Image (cartoon, rainbow, N blue to C red; front, side):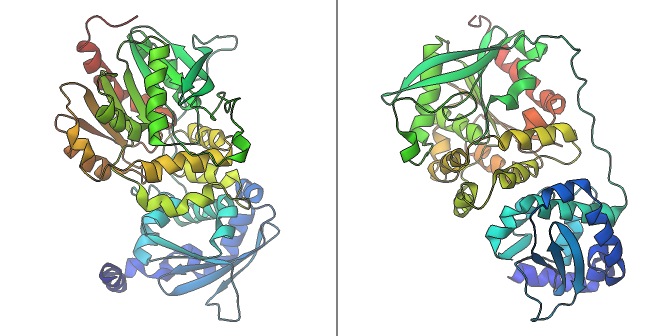
Length: 452
């Protein structure tokens, strides 16, 4: 509370941070902002069936945005108690200023992250806000564009392969028995050399690693193996279980045992494990509990705990909140300026997973994974190398949080990846590769006779 009061006093002293200096809240700009929102093709698509009133607050200054049938029909400044609203979004002038910058600082780029980091407050009918999250976030992006005129151009995507080109990636199925249940597990692989198993994020699948699978500089030294965890991608639920009568829940024990059984079944000799998000959390768990099974682990976006996000679990599997919420919230976890196509591709792939899988995976990520008791200090890096790499713009597991984890693991190596977010291998692979290759080269140098 003292921090908020202090910021409010500073805002009063700084004329640049007066609320009326923001164009979206300025009464003289309301007709232009209405036109900009309603003319936006993405907003029109996202706002279908949206008819609500949104209260926006910059400090104590308020405006009401009335949306009917997907169009903004009125912006009312200084509303009274006679003007009801569905939900509100509130931030300080300082918070809005950071959020509306052409390239916002980390933790201010995305609405969901700004709320999670308590830069903004969302209240009222939150269910409705999340049900229309795509429209809401697109409207705020239009505010950012309106505030700045033009935004910096994003990086270009990599050139597409020529028509008729066939990738060297091969997809296969393997049958595993874990905890007495049989699973038909899909995986893709490419290359030869040191086995490198890559684990996808929560509620996603192996497509996130497609650029790495196709990179010749990596596959000439590493046999890259990318599984879809059961219930994800092409790995269907088990045939012997009436899974539709049970709540899906990924546990630490199952996750660990899956990644011990997979290399055993493939007859791999101490592979390298690399995982992102929940896979990054698992990398550390494997180093603690299964150091003999792996020669090295690479944790992307790892941390001690994400328990603070546990109250949001139900929103990830809610009958009145569609996959659009997850798509847009994952888009917001990517870093600004990276190729727009790849950022959208990540969001698209998230829209294809079953809602129960999102909540079930996050059970592990938010609840079952917890290293706040000093467990990571048990890791002996003379037995298993530990690398921790986190994107600058990841508000979920920020670089500062990963650094705290790394400080508990004597001999581990921490790398902050500038210009990357929560999905470094997918949102900008070429930039990610500049950080990854020195790590892989170091691992390769320590293994003169790799398994083939």
